[in-house]
Amino acid sequence: MSTTASAPGKVYLFGEHAVVYGEPAVPCAIERRASVTVEARADDRLRVSADDLSLDGFTVEYSGSSDERPDVDVPTPLIEAAFGYVDAAVAQARDAADAPDAGFNVEIESDIPLGAGLGSSAAVAVAGIAAATAELGCDLDAREIAERAYQVEYDVQAGQASRADTFCSAMGGAVRVEGDECRTLDTPDLPFVVGYDGTSHDTGELVSGVRKLKDEYDFANDTVAAIGDLVRQGEDALTDGDLAELGRLMNFNHGLLAALGVSGRSLDNMVWAARDGGALGAKLTGAGGGGCIVALDSERGTKTALSLTPDCTRAFRAELAQDGVRVE
Ligand code: MEV
Image (cartoon, rainbow, N blue to C red; front, side):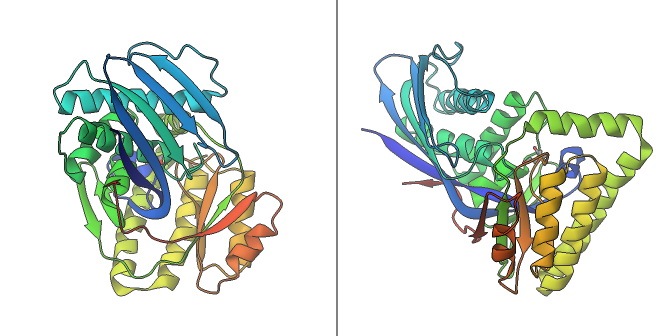
């Protein structure tokens, strides 16, 4: 017997990075999912195969218990990081089900590019915990899965994580996260377009960079607080269904993230291409450095404009995913 669970990726309408320091953020789940299939083993070992964890696709396997490192060549540090999330997710499932010696074969499939700002690690952690606990006959609700998935990110990212990505992936839809207060939001239709530069980033490094800036410069603390103010204004615009104001606030949010040093040339170029193409607003999404931008597009010209931008390797519409984690 085996069990499969899936969970969506996300874009940030507002608030990444600042959310790590207790400011509110509004991530939105999108219709791109990671699926994790687990099969209980007779021993206590873990065998993970990952297929297509990047948009380019690859397959790799390793065997080991959760406290051993993979014993095969790992193609990139990012994939090693993905295995770290799986290890930690399995540890959470063993703990939840009170089954410390449970072993699994784990298969991951994902159409969320790794380390690109679309919440791939959160989706893998959420789906992994859901699949492994269900396989062990332990029923967790989405909030419990979210909390355990947050512990996974917190451990793997050395204590530098907020609950935003994992809560959003577990619950689906648009959510608001401020510290440990997490709730779902009703939103108008949000016509998102994503532009992807084909690169990836290390979330932990980018979060550390912002922390250092905050330690050294008052402006960085003020910038984080300003992002929080802007998120609160964004909530009013969401309630009013005011897409034009949401777009303006996204543009401001991008500028503030750039001031914190987490944008980059390709992200800036894609943001400007989206705005030139008629987007109401555009900003980087996630940790930054490289990866994805998200644009709010009512004119429907943004995707074409992004497709014609040399820095953009892929542009796609991203529907809001109403379903969060799901045992298939
Ligand atoms: C990464 O997707 C979002 C950050 O705010 C980190 C976090 O919230 O854990 C940069």
